[in-house]
Image (cartoon, rainbow, N blue to C red; front, side, top):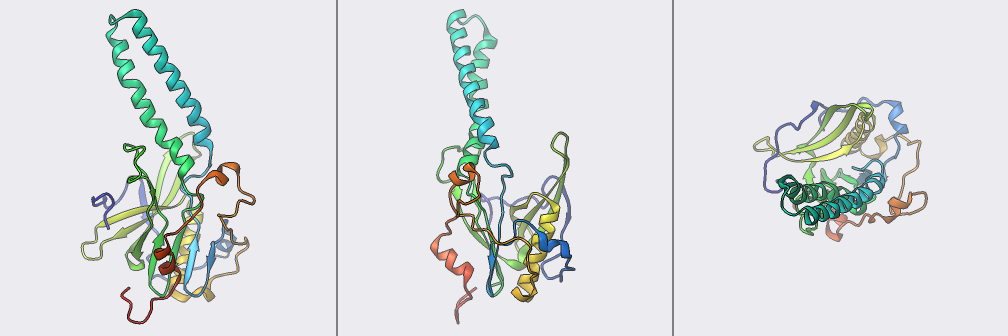
Length: 270
């Protein structure tokens, strides 16, 4: 599968190194049993890990709405000034024409994303099919109101084609060094990266989740530790913030939901 019909770059900006490969046996660390949140659930067939691409839900909305109001007010002021001063100020015409659309283009996608992003974006690991199923939310900053370019579009990939990548970016004012973990998917025939999805916001959780996934896919649920924190049903509003409660619940399409949780039937093509 290609994202939007394009082959992705081999490495994205900020790549540092890869985590152990899918067939490497994890050297388990006891501290990983304290990972929070813990896996959503697991059984003999499927493991589901939680995932959130937005850390602080509602912050962008709370900051973005006043920003949109400010842009609207500035636009009205510029047009009023344009009518008052006539067409004598070329710079005012340029600002009035270019600035508001650019500011709206920059703000609206972020505000909408904070409102319509699902409350959880889980990844399922099916050890009997040796596949992963990603509850992926796609969006586009250009086609802001397009249903085609916005929405949940779950995808499935072969486990052997997945690589966990660590990305490091230094961001002054945001805690200094930021370490994210991404999952890239390669075409086994060409070794080209055909998709790359967000995994975790920090290296500790990324290493823990990746070790948990590898243990499960290699050895089954018996190899997993007893987790300190209980699993969480993200569709249950109890204990969630108001912004999380307003967010859409997780709803897998029926066909991929069934496939991701069950073993392949006899004679079924995997």
